[in-house]
Length: 354
Ligand SMILES: [Zn+2]
Image (cartoon, rainbow, N blue to C red; front, side, top):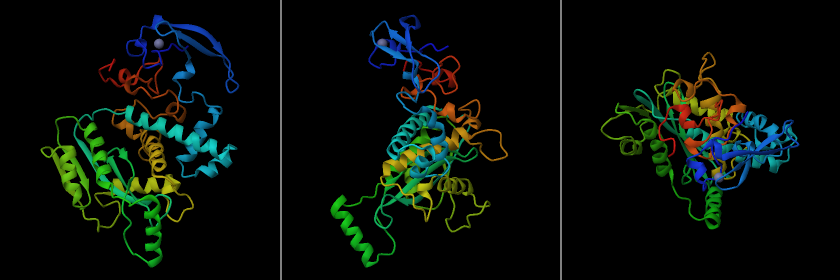
C-alpha cells in the first residue's frame, strides 16, 4: 500500500514539511500499461492532485515495461539503434527514453553517496574519445574511482584541441570545423577540477586522502587545490610502465577498459559514436549506475562497489534502480524504501527538511 511521503509540488508547504494527514486519497485511475488501478491523492494545502506514478521514474511513460531492458542493453555496449530494433521501439522513442533514464540515473548516482568512513583512496586518469568527428573534435574524459571498491566517483567529458599528426586533409577538416563551430577550446582543466571536487565531497573526514595518478604535471596543483594540500598524499606512477595487473594504476586502467567495453560509443573501431558531448556524459551516468549499484565488484564477489562503501545495504536490481524518482535530492524516496522512506533517512544522513 502506497502512502505519499510529501506533496510532489516543490512550491507547496507540504513538500518540505509534510503532514501525512493532509495528503488524502482521491480515487484512482487505470492505465493501459498496468493491470492494477493507480491510487490518486489530493493535497489539502495546495488542492492539487497527484498519483503514485508522480513519484515513479517511469512517470508519463507509454512503455514503462521496456525501461529495464533498455537500461541493460545500454549498459552492455549495445548502441541506440540496435537497442531500438531489439525492443521494437522507434529510434526517437529509444533516444528519448535513453535521455530520461540517464538523467534519472545522474540524480540517483549523486543521491546514493555520503562521506566515506575511514581514509579515502582514489585513482584518477583521463582517456580520450571524440564527438561527431574523430580527427577534429577530440574529448578528454577524466575518471575518478575509489581504489579498493572500484566505485566510480565521477566521470565527465571535456573538449580538447585536436593534436597529433596533421595531414593536409586533417588541417582542412579542422579549419572547416572552426568556421562552423568556432575555435575548439581546451576545457579539460575545468572538468578535472569538477571531478576532483566530487572526490572531495566524499572525503569529508579528517583523515589523509590518498590520490594515485600518472605523471601528468597539471594533476599536482589541481589535486592539492581540490582535495586539500595539507592532507593529500599524491602518488605518481610513470605512464610508461606496462599496463598489467602489477601496475599500481591497474584499478583505474581496468575501470577504463570496462567503460570502453560496456559503452559501445567508447569502443575503438566501432560504428557507434557520440554525436554530442552531452549525450556521452549521459551514457557515462548509465555506466556509473550499472558499475556502482548493479554489478558486483568482481565476478567472485558478493557485493557491489556502493555496498562495500556502505552506500547501499545490498546490490540493487535494475527495477530498483529505475524505480522511485530522484528529483528531490535527499528528500526523494530511497530505491530500496519499504514504506517510502527518504534517501536521507535510509542512509542515516541528517537534515531531513533541508
Ligand atoms: Zn501540496
